[in-house]
Image (tube, rainbow, N blue to C red):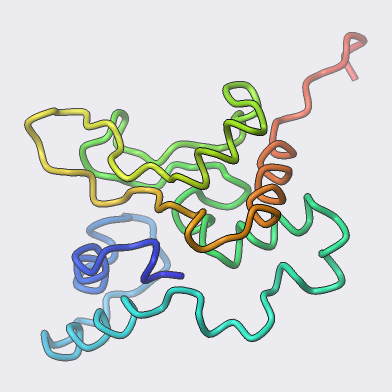
Length: 173
């Protein structure tokens, strides 16, 4: 789904200098020649989930558990690529408030399940800009309702709701 989640402009920038976007990235800079990088960007931009013969989140080991299925979706559809492992957030995005993609660990505090499903379905095509006169943010959340079924989105919602940190009990344990 990289071609669905990221623009060709972002892919080019990333392949040109990964650490320029994310300082602590594990991806090395391969110093691709322009023609090679252009070809890679063109190829990556075509990857929109169409090559899955069996979607990992439909595997019998997770299909009966909406939270596990949602976690598989989160990881394999690529939500993890922007929102981080277990939705911790913290990845860069230019010209957004705080400069970072938000954490999802507390979405249950701000959204009902129905509202969250709608937000995932419709996406966030134009994140709020920190500087109204500045550049458009390079990363936005696509309209996942175009790619995922209603029950897949519902599984994602169940997983995201499960990320809420467990609060301490009244007796301190």
